[in-house]
Amino acid sequence: MIHFIDTDSMNPPQSVQDMVMRHIDRGENAYEIYCRIGADVDGLWPKSRDLARQIIDQVDEMSYAVTSPLGLGDMPSAARDVLLLALLDKVGLITVHDDDSKVLWEVKSRDGLQGGPRKLTFSEKVGRCPLHSDSAFAYDPEKYLCLYVVKESGDGGGESVVVSMADAIEELRDEQDGETCLRLLRDTIFPFRTPPAFSKRTKTLTAPILSGSSTVRYRYDCIEDGFTDIPELDTDDRRWAVSYFSDFVENRASKHTFLAMRDQLLVVDNRRSLHARTDFRDAGRALIRARLHAPPASVLAGRGTPIHATST
Ligand SMILES: [Fe+2]
Image 1: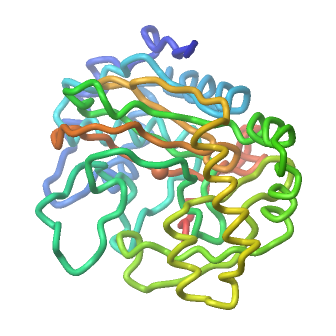
Image 2: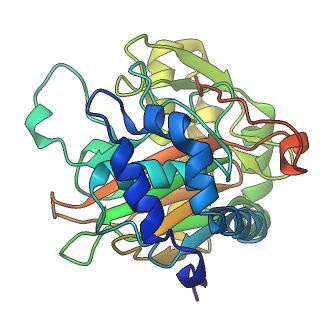
């Protein structure tokens, strides 16, 4: 059963929306506006800090958190984005998404680009997305993946699926060749190619799939492309380990599955879990994605100011 964080007493008051609307400037993006008026937003919406704390605690405990509606859904998109950033900025350090320095990325079908020069990534297409972690190709993948629902799929599809890596590793140990697979995932480097949607400068990073007690980086298509880039890493044992792991997480690992609706926020521990979405066909489905690094311990303890970092 999915536990939702009840946001009723913590949603932004009308006064903060009114104040943000007075500062909307067509020349600035939401992040620039937030940086300019963030202190005023915090003053009018102090409960955003309590909500952020609850999100952090639940992600630590469960590896994901889902809120009830945040009260941003009926706002003009510019005000919604500023207030979403105000909340997320208290959860972690917001990173830029790509070469264009976007911090909020619209997860929406970009069918108009089909047949264009570059391959579309999962967040640009309708349909199922297999289990993976975000920024698997980055040197330091973010701790938090945040997905705010602008509009859910009208066909009831597009459910979110989360697999806790700690649970999956325990379950994998009980599989016939599970220990062999785990050893290869920990002790062998795999190549991860950066998809062109994230950077026009193609880079291929090499790293183990598992590290620490349950830290994971995994994205099947990036590894496939990485094998093309670095053929000496395209070995039978690596192919076997990736295929075995993929079959296990997709078909046998325990999963948390739920349909996040309009105005709800899903936050996933991107380093200790995998996420996916079930099939959907509604091209009008729209989410906003942000990724955050965990703040340094000094910031969590209430000292210092977050430093905004990039992910790649
Ligand atoms: Fe993802």
